[in-house]
Image (cartoon, rainbow, N blue to C red; front, side, top):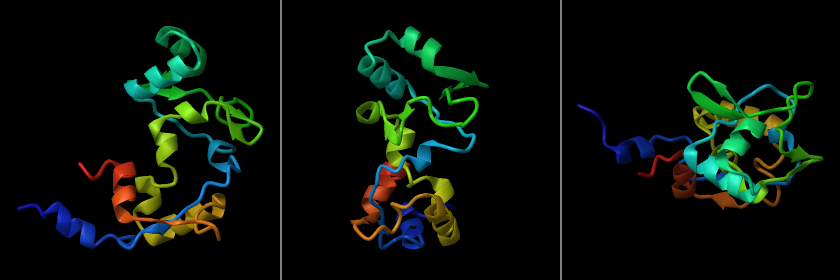
Length: 145
């Protein structure tokens, strides 16, 4: 018999929330090979934002990895294709994966994972960072459904 979702929430190490404030440093979009996985809604939003058909957008800015679609990255620096300087050139239409950062499961499994993410992201526990309540974190993780 499985546990109720409410029981699982009580055991989360970040149950009282986490502090985060984006400083627009761009570090989450640069420097290491990775993937920005796109959902259908992301493709629609980005193609509209760039005034391109979905087919044009997919051809120009993405590649397939297995059955999934990911944004391209600079082949030398591994920066996101949409990173210009330290700013996202499609910020208003950025993919859901980007909107959810740093609230990714990989950063939240254990407190040590969060602290490791903090090494790269100056917005985690930043002095000006508001407390993000558990309910908002779960929405970003799609665990509130």
